Length: 163
Image 1 (cartoon, rainbow, N blue to C red):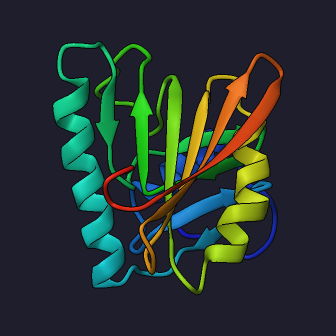
Image 2: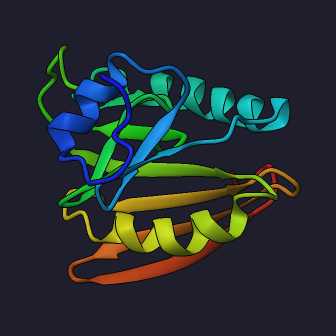
């Protein structure tokens, strides 16, 4: 499937497009948008987080996944955070998390503003998501957003010992 010159894609059409496309894409309000690559520092931070989560979640029914797991954020949007903890039923053929409870974005200088504002608002709109972590790659700091009922609370965790 080639990318339509104009027009909007449904989520199933987007996943069909992904199966035949090259590069990394997100669906934003029905429009396929190519994503940029990540730096080595970004990838190191994401890999370390994935390894730590894998050990911690073993036997819980939840599983951490990397940046190829989609998260549905609106009717016609699919985002690809750096890490997702999926606590829903495992569907081997699914191209998105069935119940994303934790979403982690590793912030890069070029994506910091976008990830910590627009994407954050979209993630908060997904009722399954309980926590959103924004991880700084420059200093050892994580901004944690936790859902408390209908209210979101923020906490800044600083320092390697704390994290």
